[in-house]
Each structure stands twice: as structure tokens, then as C-alpha cells.
Amino acid sequence: MEFNPALSIAEKSPEGPNKPFAEKPIMVFWETTRACLLSCVHCRASAIKEPLPGELTTEEGLRLIDQVASFGKPSPIIVFTGGDPLLRKDLFELLSHASDAGVRFALSPAVTELLSYDALKRIKEAGVSAVSISLDGANAETHDSIRRIDGTFQRTVQAMKDAVSVGLNIQVNTAIMKSNYTELPQLFHLIKGLGVKTWELFFLVKVGRGSGVEDLAPEEVESVCNFLYDASFYGLMVRTVEAPFIRRVAKERQESGDYWKDERYQRLRRDLLQAEGEPVGHSTIGPRGTLDGDGILFVGYDGAISPGGLVPVTIGNVKTESLASVYRDSELLRSIRSRAMSGACGMCSFIEICGGSRARAYAYHQDPLSSDPACFYGTGGHS
Image 1 (cartoon, rainbow, N blue to C red):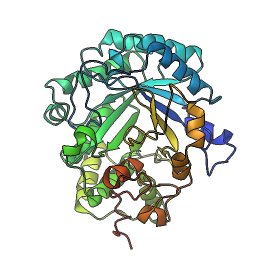
Image 2 (image 1 turned 120 degrees about the vertical axis):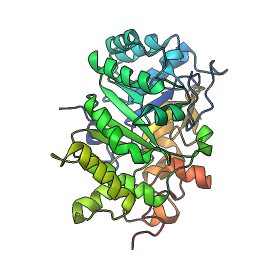
Image 3 (image 1 turned 180 degrees about the vertical axis):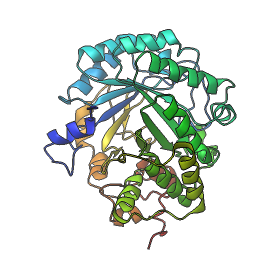
Image 4 (image 1 turned 90 degrees about the vertical axis):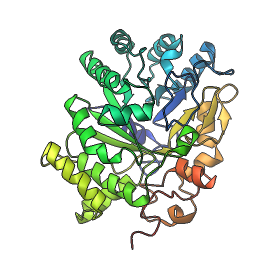
């Protein structure tokens, strides 16, 4: 049986299953560096070639790992992200320390020449539980236009094959935007054929370089969520980032069986059935998930703590404060976990299982507790 950190932590929460992440998050994302050799159009950060001043030192990074361990067992999973964590010369020292501390960890490298077959073997030997690799299109034209470096699509597909061959658990991350969402059935078919087990889809939030990228209208978001619900019946774990309303879609579909009627969804569904045939099995979309600040915590390159990587609200710093104390005592995080939202999100009957994207609420309204404008239900589309 695959390890389920959400279940393990929820079972041990003193708040019980309705507040499973009150005492500890599932995952702590650590932006190990801003340095990155890519320059993707949708990136939240203005990535650079060299580390920024103030980046956590090796010693500070080791202490951060100890702070994650101090949450208690089972500890949150550390996701080493960036920028590109492979640009940190001390990366494998940090991974070794996490292993020695009994903290599970995952890695989110950029697909550059640094992500070689030998590097993937070394990552596997370090004990990484999963590696996430980004693929944003079903062909080179789409993916390379988003990643802005020719040849990235072929390098990415090869990295996925290499990772599977050395025994790594691979998660494919896909950023969804206006320019690529119609390719999702073909992309699903591609990654499924490569032996990928987890597909995580990031619904664009207009921050950083992504501010100039055209995101989806609420009707398109609803269509994509209904498509992903269908795709979740084919044996892959399907997860979303900044789209918690997929749990509302799944609940509605399970209870009524009705399909979303929009033609954009119907096209996606037809393409999926053409590529994969009729589905078998059960949906992999769970009834309860995380939000930024509720099961998720983010530590920036300089130690700044925020609810998530796309919610630029600093609530502390690991250089001077306890990560566990900030997570448990922050007024903002307590409000998120108690679902003290305003607007349509605050009045929604699905607030407990969804809660809306706190990152998108902040990007549009400068308030992480306001309503999520991408939700079709919240815009009055449902009676």
C-alpha cells in the first residue's frame, strides 16, 4: 500500500479528522535557491543564474531540516524545490541529513543538463521518495514555448524514462493555462505510457512572470476539473494545485452522476476516451485535501515562512523562529484552517472540502482570506 501522509497525520491529529492538519502540515516546501537555468513563462519567481544574497547557508538548512523533524513522527515531507535545487552545491549533504533525521523528502529539479542519468541515480541512492518533473505540453512546440528553451521537451521525456529506469517514483507536474489545456488528454496518454504514477496539475496563478500569461475562465476551469475527474479513473494518482474545487466537482459527480455540459469539457472527454478507452477502477481524487497554510507550509530561499509559494505573505523566518510554532500559532494560518474566508468562498456549502485557492485570492484581491475568482460555483454559475 502506498504511504499516505495525509491519512497518517490526520489519524494522529488531536483535532480529529475534521481538522487533520492543525498541529503539523503534510509538506514543507523549501525553496532551496532562486537560481535556475530556465526562464519559464509562468514561474512565480524571477529566477536567476546565481544564488541571491541571504540564501540559507548549509548550517541554516540543516537546522531547518531539524525543525521539520521536531513536528514529531510522522514528520512532514520536505520538498526540496527552487529555482533548481541541483544548483546548490550542498544538496546531497542536505538530503543525507534529512535521511539521518528520519524525515521523508522529495525533490523538484529543473530539467536542464544537470538532470543527467548519473544525477538521477545519485538522487535515487540518496533516498528521495519522489521526484517531480514538469511537462506542460503533449509536444515540443507547446512545452518548449512555455519553458522558453528549445529541446526541453525531448530532454524532459528522456529524464522521465531515465528516472523510471533507475527506480525513482516520478510525479509529473503540469501548469495549466489558456495555451495548453486542450492538450491535456494527449499529455495524459503520453505520461501514462511512460509509467508515471502521479500527475499533479497546477492551475495558473498570475504572479511573478506568470502575471503576463492568460489563465482560464471559470467555465474552462470547471471543464478541466471535470476532465481530471474522468482521468482519475485510469489508475494514475491525479492531484491539483490551486484548484481545491476539484473536490467539489468530484463530490457532485459522485452524488448525481451528471456530467458538465460545456462543449470544452465534452471535447476533452472525447479525446480521453479515444486515447484510453472506457475507464476502470475508482477515482484517485480524495474527499479532503490541503490548502496553503492548511497542511502546506513554504520556506523561501532566505528563510521567510509563508502559507504557500504563491502566497507572498511573510508570517515568520526560520532563522529566528520555530517553524512549528509559526505553523500552529499564526493568526492567518489559524483563519485558513478554520475556513474564515469572506465573499463567495465564505458562504459556500463546500467550504470544508474546498476552501478555494488562497494564492489566487491574494493575487486578485490582495487578501489571502478573500474569494477565489476561478471557481465557477462561486461566480454564480450554479443555482
